[in-house]
Length: 234
Image (cartoon, rainbow, N blue to C red; front, side):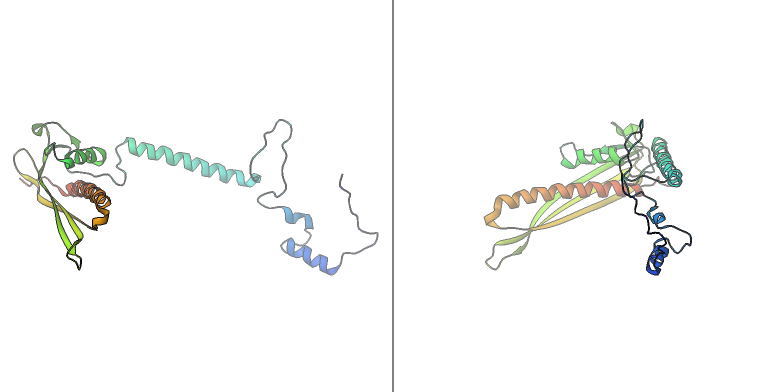
């Protein structure tokens, strides 16, 4: 039991205590010092009564509970609406919308870019890939893929200091009548890297990594640029 400290009989509160009380109570007259402990969150620990579970974290006042329920309700509604939009075919950011519904990819299977291109089109493209050109609305022809490596600079001693890698891809989109939906277009990717004979193995690994990155970059550019393909005017 805490001992209650009662003021001495006949003692009056000092002027300083009255001023402090007014400041802590927000200037409201008739407010006791104890009211300053009433805030949005109780500072003193709350122990559960019999039959109640212990709540973790600060307690919310009763007038804050409707706001909490409203926020939670808006969160649930947002999830439901986003799920409905995806189910209805709403395309999220990052997907490619095309003017054609089906496509056949005409590219040699031996080319490394062919597999990655098909996988990317199936993943983010709005058109369905078909197995035969005669069943497709358009045909994507990958006419050529050229990889070139050349010396970019030499050291003072005449040794190679930098290499330049270049990937060039030509592609075209047309229908089964030979009419262009997208005339022959070019994708050109360049990367450079420094070279040293003392780090030959590490530089070779770096070169292979750059080639893979350049291929991915070329695929992404093709997927985006296919969005500009349009049905030819009769």
